[in-house]
Length: 188
Image (spheres, one colour):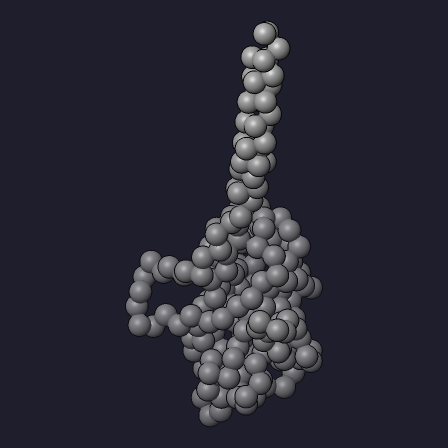
């Protein structure tokens, strides 16, 4: 008579284990997914701001990263003699000898973003104004090809949004610098 209640209680414990163990195993796995939002927010929404496209391979803090700052055909109206990039003061990364200019193939769903041809250029870092000047040996033409300034750096320690402003000096009668646009990258 005492065996029946023990058997019933044992069967009930086994049933609870079978039903609730998948829930207990799956709960920690639900927290591993991060939401990647494609939202860019600007504090000052004026008509002079122009958003440029960019791509980075890794957005984690302190990780090795390759950042492509694109200059598409719609971003250039004439040949460019000089590109000036204002680096954010909080972007603490060593840029020495890690900046290049190339003709790029912008990737998508089936292909990867990669440099097709390197463009020889002189790169100068101005520590006083925290800007980067890029002088290509030949002007960047205003054709249908896309070009990119490529950073191969370690990401900064601080997470956040970093906004890079760019200015270009066009070839022609009056080679003055004008605003090309801004890139806002995200470090998680």
